[in-house]
Structure formats: C-alpha cells, structure tokens
Length: 277
Length: 112
Image (cartoon, rainbow over all chains, first blue to last red):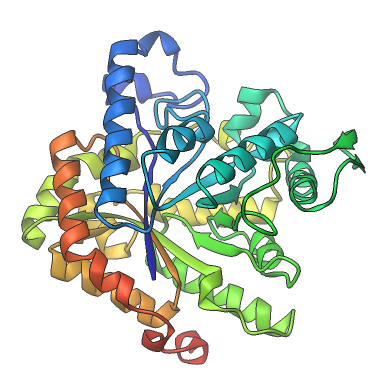
C-alpha cells in the first residue's frame, strides 16, 4: 500500500473558553497572532517536507475556512509551497470547487501544480462542511447540485478540447479553455474523502469514475462497513469487481517505544482534537 | 459547533444527517478520551509493533491500497510530532509499503 501523511494545520491552542460556543465561523480573528502564524506555517511545512524525505509516498492537505481548527483556507498555497521541495505525491483532499462561483480558477490552479510537479498531484473533490456555506454566503440547499456540476465542469475543462461552452444549472461559461492542461492524462487522480454517505459511495464507484474512496477519521467499524459497501455496490449495482486501488483508509497515528508511553504522550493532543467544538 | 452551523438548512438529506450524527456521536460523545478512541479504532496509538499490526490487520480485512495518517494533531507540539514522524517512518512505514492484494483476504471473506 501507499502511505501518505495528512496535515490539518491547526492553530496552536487558544484559551479554552474561546472554543465554548464554536471554533468555526464566529471565533473572532482578533485572537489570531501573525507571529504565531508565521512560525506555525513554517513548522508544519517542515513536518510535511520531513515526511517526504523519510520515504512517505506523499503528503496530503485540505481546506477549511474561518477557524483555528485548520488555518489552511487555501490548500493550493500549501501545495505550491511544497511542490518544489518534495519528490512524492501531493494530495489536495480536497478543494471545495462548489463553494466558488468560478470553479475554473481552482481547476487552473490544480493544473498548474500538476505541471510544476510533473504529475504528482492528486485532486480531492469535497463539498465543504456545512459551516463553510456560512463563510461563503452560498445557499446550502444547492450544495449537492453544485458539487456534481462543478465536478463535471472541472473534468471537462481538463479533458475536452477548448474552447467550448458549458451550460449548467448553476454554472454558465461561454468559453472554457483552461491553460495549462493537466500534466497527467486524462487528468490528476481524483479522490473522494467522505464520512460514509451512501450517495457519495455510489457516485464514486460508478464505472465512469471509479474514484478512490477515502474513509475519513471514523471508528474502524465505519471503515469495514463503507469500504465493503463500495465493493458491494460495484459488484451488485454496476457489475464489476472494485480494485483495492479504489479504496483508502485514514487514521491518526501516534507511535512511541511502548504502548503506555504512546498513550500518555498522545493523550492531551488527541483529547484536544476531539473535544473542542 | 452548533448543529445549525454544521447542518445548515438543505445542506444534506435528513437521512444522511441522521447517519452522520449517529456516526459522530460515537466519536464526539461521552467517551472521547484517548483510551476509547484507540479502542474504537478512530486513532491508532501504541508501540511500533502495535501500530504496524493494527494497520496490517485492517489491510488484510479490507484490502485498501492507500493509508493516510495524521501525525500532527490538535495541540501536539513540535518535538513530539517530529519523534512521531521519525519513529513511524523507520518502524511502521516500510512494513506497510510492502503489502498488496496478496495480503488481502478478499471481499467475500471480509463481507461475512
């Protein structure tokens, strides 16, 4: 199997009471300190570069907005910073194309990174979590529709000869003609990180797509249920045998010389991650 | 996060919302300490031997081609993170990179 290390870029802990209402959307950015931010960004980039040097197959980054949970509103910026200092894969898991009124700007940026890295990019398609619809002022009712339509638009922009017109329900472009085209053909591998939505599994497993489904940080029982559901849907609904290359599992790890030492050293940070709202 | 912020109106179907809430409760519910999270397999914490065995066991049962870990999380400081990255890379990573479908029990066995 291939092994990637993911990073959420969390802002260092703030006083507990600040998280009481929500760590998302409304936690005031007056608590952000640029000197802390400068040091933190560079520390985290160093950690991902170290993983690359030590033989990981790749590193992964993602996108969240207006929260100290993840100070990475643009994984494009992170991927660009990593692109010239790493040799392995860079997985953007993912970009929320559908939050944008112009998903093509993200399609262009992904294509640039794919070209700069000579085809080391993996593109994740996500909808963004509910809170991000507040951040962007986008109507959450259209989230799923925009997600599917933005996917079609971006894949066509990467694969069809331009210029062509795209007329969707939510997106209308008279001229789709993205320069650069992706380095990888037909386009960068597309991964679908999810918590286990049946619609998402059926969509990712469709024979037209066969995208890698990544079961996110959940109990192991969820991985058993949903990875097997992908294989079952492929076989029973679509009539083909899903390959292991279509499946991924994700879990935070902490390793120390003994089990006891590992638990004690990880305790505070793990409980911070899972108890702040 | 307030529920209304996590699930703004129309963001997802009622059925999906119920499924996600049920899934999250096991993680975000009462027992969100490191022991319970480790027991549930939300996190994989232990000696190199323990962590290696748990991921390889999961691979044998599920056959995934890709494992994505998170070696810095929450408030984990720079020193512990670097130790974690170096020990994982030296003692766990090589054994994972060796396995492929030959180590997978197969779908029918796993689905029983």
